[in-house]
Length: 286
Image (cartoon, rainbow, N blue to C red):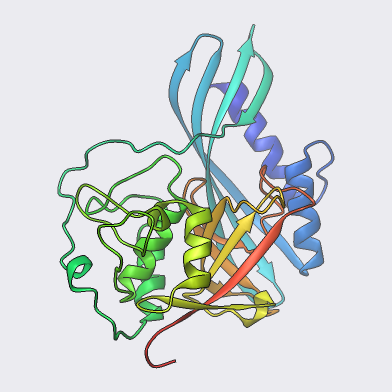
């Protein structure tokens, strides 16, 4: 990591720890969110890795770690951003988070075929602990048994639900059900908007009940995000814990995140028009 980027990252982190953010909208929203929750960052660290140099632009990954205290509760929030910086004459001119289109990244070694796609198991018990354990295990890496996408949020959430026992259904119709095989997958498995509508409409296999408040969610439940408020859902997360005010903390992919506050006000994708859908996952014992 070059010195100019290292200094800029350290400046950002220190401004959050000191509660004196003033010049970056995303960080300012994070600071305001922390204050509204009665929370404070005790320590912050970052680790960077250069991905490539493309002309005047340097692409890099930065892994942020925030030790957060809320009342007597202390937890670690983590986030990995892919960013691009423009440096001229050893001076940082521009630094921004990159946004990537949905792209399948090609063949993965050892991708599994899932016989339950054909079996269409109807009765199942949703094991929330296993879903959360999977979310924690793979929040910043990729299970080689599955395909990988550079916009991977819904693929990751689908894997978490499947790890919790949710059966795949609807194969081989890509527009129906929720499934993945070694060489194909349904839209609902990988696309946030299709996943949101599947959760609302499914009558067999994995099912969900929409609720009105995030406090009603438990670990293993799901939140869907429409960042622009235009009716098109862009993102999916899984609840992995609750804070001291009983609000969800979530894990996600694409911008890989762990124990992030559910509202995503600290995201560059956030807009004042953001809309959420809160889903309680149901099973045959519900």
